[in-house]
Image (cartoon, rainbow, N blue to C red; front, side, top):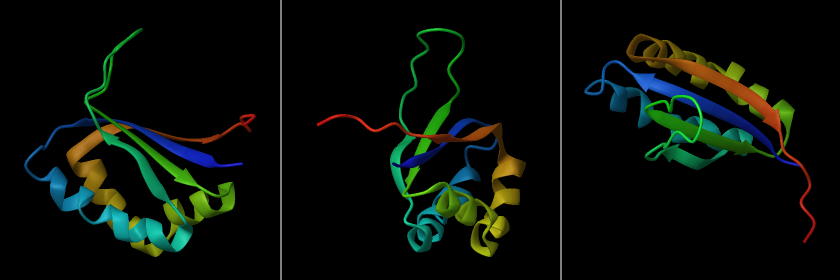
Length: 98
């Protein structure tokens, strides 16, 4: 069963944000992570939509936490926190019948 990290992000520094976002993909590979959603044009059906939505998929919770706590991502996290605010949550997926 896959595990997801979902980010609801509001960017305060759109010119600087690519400095962070361009470096993230390389940090995912060792943990089996991949982008399912990256930015897009969120549309609020209820509540308020953030500027960006990010959905990362990982094979396991251990790999998702391993990525988040890795030295590679720990180096980038302060960049994101300086240029954007938001929420990151780890959620477990469900098995979908074929």
